[in-house]
Image (tube, rainbow, N blue to C red; front, side):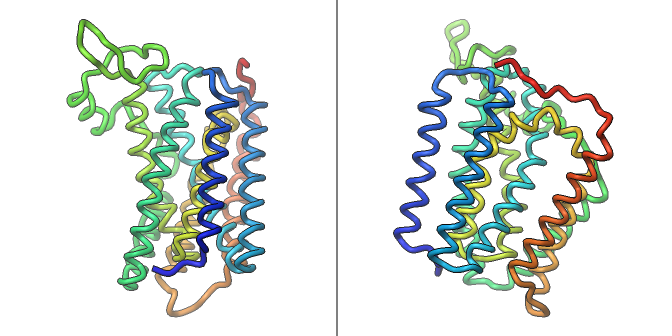
Length: 314
């Protein structure tokens, strides 16, 4: 399995991720508190800046095509993560997760997602390097997924009614109410899980679904594991801040799902028809940005009269 990433670049990537996570949880969010919109905006800007700096490093060391592939993958994953925010919003509401503990829950959710996606990227790259026909299968899956999203726009998730939730209730003894910020508590002499743990498990399960689509979509741009993994992880790391920044606006993105569906169809066709034509990475980036940007702008125009709560208690 070949990659453009040198040992130095892999090491630098790992160090940057470790340092940023340590600063995020160990320094700035060591104590549980409600994340304000202002704080979320600052951290979102920080994560985007770090990602773009790494993108510049990729361009300097590996060339324009590698940098373009990284940026395209980053935009795709970032856009799909916005759709994932509404799932988080519904989960927190369904399990009555206090605002003060939501950052902690998202942090551990992201840690689990980092491990999961690393395995999926290397596994997918290994498979594609040995069984090239899988590109056509992946492309077909993305096209079908996008078509289903277009056919069922605006379908709201109800995690508290899912089969996964009912199964978890049977397997894991759970308290009826959250108990502070703990995942486990002792009740009548027995160790029981709190709704926070169930919410965390459902976050991880929902991320598996989103990860399959987003990673396959990035494979349509490049199959190099270094570019796929780094672009995916950098977009993922900013998801917590993005949630607190955009959670109250989630319902305004009425055209985002159709926009994402068109992106999946586009990259699916690009992957399935790779032997018939080749689109430059720069052109793919333009198409993705136009589809996502257009859907967001159209959503904001369509819902400009909606009253939104933007401020959170600090």
